[in-house]
Image (cartoon, rainbow, N blue to C red; front, side, top):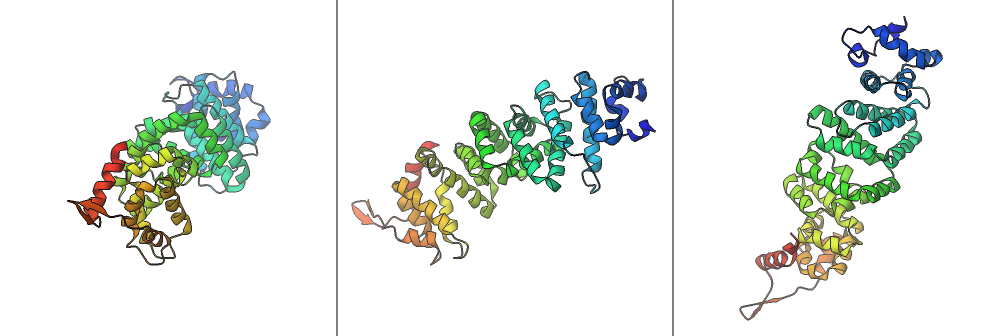
Length: 357
């Protein structure tokens, strides 16, 4: 009867040798886990195996794989019940297992990722505050976030990579501003490397991770330090509404950093002002206009470029109206004073701005 209840602990996961019996595995496990815990919860039983310092590495790996299988079976089952406190302990146990093994070790990396993601999903259904607390624990852990990012950029198998991407999206979008700031302080250079690889390998668009890196000011600020990769992504994206909003968030994150802003403008990000200036009045906001106003106060050398981009926009649109208030600057061509046409605007634009490329 007991073996039947624990059928999810399949031999392919837990039996050390092909000819071992299931009972030969369970006897040492049961000996180290209280029987009351064993009968009260499958989850707690497997957790006991993982937490037990006497469990071998192979046994722990098998228990984690079994836990991942149990998650697969119950992830959409509304009747699934995990005892209070077990989710938190499982996440913490997974953190210890990540520390115990190399981040590049293949087994059971995906299972650990899947288990953490399911625990957060389960907590989010009815214990949102506990879920948020556990996300803070993940961000403060020395190895879990690097483990997830490495899984995103290094995992070759598409199905396995999805689990790391989904987990990264979940923790980044549900984390607090203070958690993201602490992450950036701790891993700034590594984050730049990981994000560069995510851009280069088209992971960002393939797994719809744009909100992950552009919605929050903190992460957009890291992206702002990678203008070359950002420029290439923006050119290839082609979804202009999404592109403009993402690039606007990056510009906004650099509003207090003149040097970073200058580099971003040097890659042509100011061109998004054209699209914003042509939005209907009810879609253009003072937030957009105030950012562009602040950019030109910081870098007045871009005023004529901005004017050219926005002056023909919608009347009543605050960005277009602001562009029309900028006095036109005339230039000399062959000793004659002329209004700058698009050719000369482009010449000014690229000669002054692309020097950062």
